[in-house]
Image (cartoon, rainbow, N blue to C red):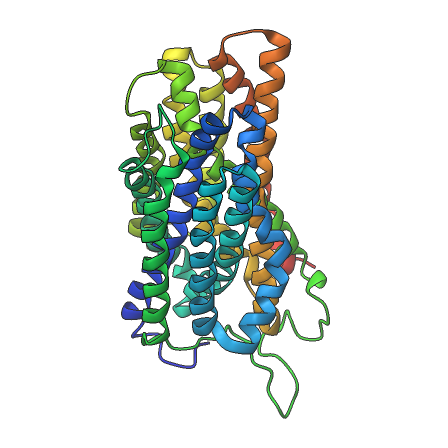
Amino acid sequence: MKKESNKNYVIPLIIVGVMFFVIGFGIGISGFLTPALRSAFDLSTGQAYLVTAAIFSAFVIFGRPAAWVITHIGYRKSMVLSFMIMALGMLLFVPSANAFSFPLFLLALFVGGIGNTLLQASVNPYVTILGPMDSAAMRMSLMGIMNKMAWWIAPLFLGLFIDLQEVRIDDVILPFYLVTGILVALGVGIFFAPLPEVVAQGEEVLEESKETQSSYAKGKTSILQFPHLILGAVALFLYVGIETLPMASIIDFAKATFGDEPNLERYASYVTIGLVAGYLFGVLTIPRFLSQTRALIIFSILGVISTLMLVLAPIEYAFYGLLFVSFSNSLMWPAIWPLAIADLGKFTKVGSSILVMGIVGGAIIPLLFGFIVDWHKGVAEMAAVASYQAGYWVMLPCYAFILYFAIHGHKIRIKK
């Protein structure tokens, strides 16, 4: 339940949509910087994906502390603090560029990841419990559109300052000064924004009875007593990995497929197109024609089919499989999140922090992919595009587990 009426949450959703845009912008920057830093510092494919690892490792380290922060200062103030931390991370890019230091770049990305962790832990449960639970995936899909628009805009923005074909690290100074200023301004704006505090059903403990309103959470003393949450965190871990992988790898895959043609960053829009198309589908169909659970089942199966197309199709067609993979990924976050935090009662904030820790999959899966590509190049001595196709096999078991969660895993809480 919310402290305020469910009827008037349009303005808060618009404000939170801006925050999802900022989250997407940060991920989009990492997707652009992966090939850029690889070129500038002459990194291997696996080493280049340390860029993504630096951002997402913060989620597993600061996931639980984020829950503590939110519990003590609330959702809105946590959002403000997250913007300031992200601004500090962006500002650290300046000394990193001046020193021409790859470790300092990783540190800057890690600090930005800390802010992203707190922001994710704040805005995702906020959107989920802001309105009716059965339409949570629809609201999350709307937020996803904002998020992925930023994925597309971020590389275009940086492309105004950085030439992907001839990277000059000192070119990042001006754009990151600008991004820092924007983040600080947004943080100040959110501080004064009309965002009501919300609580999930049963999240507040009744003072007299000391019982929770959630019958499933009643009597439980540990977050580990919610197996559907743990399975949901694993599903989210795998999902974020396979969602991040196309954005992080598409420019390198395009270069391997089409050669050194100019403006390779335009191919990043393929990922965005697929995701946004799926989100629009979710907005139009959930829950009116399709339940959150049914949507997750259908899109998991599409993910399996799309992966097989990506790794088995001829070279001239395989690249476009990333478009279908991205479409398959679109409704997974909106569906996994509400299914995983259902009936947590007073454990909702802690449960949300566990799910946020699962976002570290965005570091592990692309890093694993990068080392598979490097290994395949060395052992098979085949064309680079074939090595990328071999690396994309990593997505198949991920989709299989998400399908299991959609069919059975989330139902553990309602089965005796």
